[in-house]
Image (cartoon, rainbow, N blue to C red; front, side, top):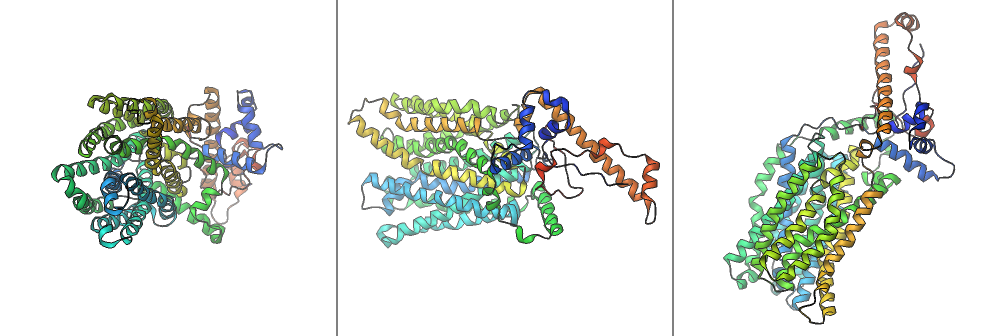
Amino acid sequence: ASKPSKPNKMSGIAAAAAHSPTTTHIEGMENVHKDAAGSDNVSASEKLMREEELSFYSASENEHGDDNIWGLLSGVGGNIYEWYDFAVYGLLAPEIGSSFFPDQSKELQLINSFGVYLAAFLMRPLGAIMFGEMGDRIIGRKHALAVSIVLITVPSVTMGLLPTYDMWGWVAPVLLVILRMMQGLSVGGQLAGSYVISIEQSSSRTRGFRGSVCDASSVGGFLLASAVTTVVRKCFTEEQVNEWAWRIPFWFSLLLAPILYYIVRNTEESKLWSERNEQKETEILIRESEHQTRPAVFDLFGSPFRRRQLAGMIGTLSAVASSFYILFLWTPVYLSELRGIMSDADADLLNFCVVGIYIFFLLIAGKLSDLFPHRMDLIRIGLPGLIIGCPTMFGMFESESWWGYLFGQVQFGLCLSFVQGCMAAWEVELWMADPTLSFTGVAIGHNLASTIFGGTMPLVATYLFYRSEQAAGGDEDAFYVRLIPGLYISFLGCVSLYCISYVVKHPHDVRTGDPKLREAIKRENQKFKEVRKSKQRRKRIEDQLGAGGDGAAVVMEHGAMDSKDMWTSPQSSFNQGVNTLEGQYQPPTTL
């Protein structure tokens, strides 16, 4: 008996267009069929992008999600620990500036202190590449998280022991920059790793909520940092804090390290990554092409479709990253140091309250995102709120009322929670089609956005503040110039709304498509399942033959296979570059 042709690994959309003549009458299917076949009017790069896009939509659903609690605790604990260490520096920026840049004006001290803060962000993309390779190709998600935790502990404790400029001169600020860069290298992999391992161990109905728990833990790190710095400033005089008490929050991280080590040790590795990694190793052995393996970052940037996904992801995250840092890091400095509306301790206390409220908002938004048909629906609701809410917050700061200061931040935090609540799940789902690349994709995209828009946020906002002060000409009643930092966030919100609407592709696009298109895809998925069953039936027959049996006779005796069971798409030339191993093909299950 002749061996049946193996079905081509292509999208259910493309297969529907190619196989059933009736589907050509469905609205939009003609274009899908034309794209799959390729057009002479498009370049080879565009054809490759279309092929990769169809492969992206045809990726199998993750069936290994079991809502493992240890994976979630590992991400939560790691985020709290690392973001506590990372946020303490920003909250103590005025004191650190006076300790390491004493010969400069107050404004330059603050700017230089935030410049060192930016240096850590510049290392985050490098950390993303390094930990992405470790998490995707070398040691896995679990062990990459453990390495990142160790990498941030040493510089944090050392920073609390670092001599000041008065003791060591110019060497002190240089060492401060080096330690901050080590912290940035660690954070570049930790948050993405917590996202990936938590979401890959989640079922599809809980991804949004578990992702929001990861983000809430990051905010919890800020909350813990805000609480510790507030206690330090309340317990010590301003002179003591400036001289030595600012070091105490850095030493506090030593108490958290043993707890976190215990949690990570009990965490299981991602089953989705383990399975796919074993498949890739088997493919390499069978094809005898080990020399063709490349680092994950090369695979990411070598694909036009992935490059577009990365660019769209960065653009979408621009508003979230900048809003997060302007609300929880720069606003306390704005209210205390720049405007002089309240003391540092009162600004930290207000920030502590806002962060606590925001964590509640974030968890609710994550749960809500699992109820929407598309992961991006809640993000599209929240982005217009960000565009309006940030200038509104700065306007409410002019109310000269504690209620105005509080509600201005709370309303902006509510809008931000709608966007960030499901962002962790959204980021991982963009790259889940290839688990051996997802850590790298999430890490690089997230950290590039955080570096470009989050790391520069304090400097940009401080610069815009001083420019607005010059524009006001010393007029304390100038209202509209106070909104300038908020209008910058509004601009980035428009960029994000465009990117998520017209640039980024998401697996849920098929789920929310035209009903007739969905029915066509369901029919085609069923045909693929029938092909797989026929192959399994044929294998059982061949196993019964024995070493010397007549295969053809036995096959005829059991009934010849119908020709439809051996269907091969006429679009097979579209996927000639895809070498699917025998028995490993999984039909599209995007629905």
